Length: 397
Image (cartoon, rainbow, N blue to C red; front, side, top):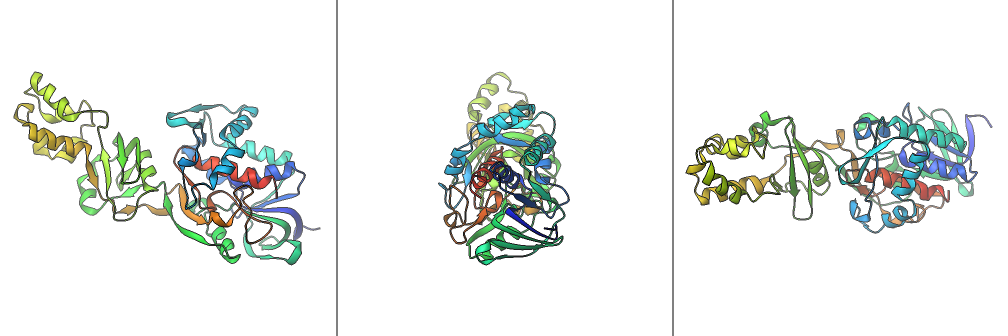
């Protein structure tokens, strides 16, 4: 049959992390697998992840590291194909990697190593990957499966897997295709929003902190539901850094976030002790030992920063401690999908099999990866969800 009208066992839309993993597993089972992607290159998001080093998984994966309207859904996939299973594949290809803070695993060299591994596995499993392939229409074709019309031609498949990702980072060719397919077949979609995304600041705060761009501080960042202890980074647009990206996935518009800039320090005790021995030094000089110098007047005001320790009453020390350890700020918003690492929301898990990722509404239709309402924390969790969900679908398609 010509390429213009092709029949395949499994048709996967999206040469993404989850799509490639699913293709590998289905191909190993002897299934004829075709992967379609509208981008010019497979695995574009893999290549840019982790600053080009690909934070491909985490040593401490659990369901608690994921956000979903059905928090139990991810457990089955994550337990059936674990981070250790993926690490075994990485080791087999002798890809050098290292562990950073909080169990994050990164390539020593380049994300290209991970993508090449997946493409090599696809080749071994005789998977066909078609790029620059735009979907024109998609329908259930009676008992024969699915008919998909694309720019290079038509495809017929008994199993259809949607691995098209979310809406984050449009320059990486993100599209709403997966959600449209799910809706077409009667699936409920939880509203989507940008996750793991920097905050923008309101005008008065933006002006106040404009000169702090580039400063990073390890903090405890929290709201009423969760807290994260990692770096925050001041940018020319607002706040970023790991702790901010993490809390952004749990943030509601209009909500305050709380930042403790010195989570390990009893600030009042620190000031009292130093006051007894170094009474003449200015507050800003002392605090520069534990905080970036430029941050102190921005938070406390220049007058307070210039105050000698000997002039500080205990009451004023308590106020300073509160300003540094209970800093409350109301973000203006987020930077949106343009810089978001993930998309929150998506295809309702209650309408999918947690074991196979198959639709409960349409036999032979599967949803995997970011298009599903499962969103991981920063730190390799979203890649592990891609590997695990793709693997599970690959066992049955």
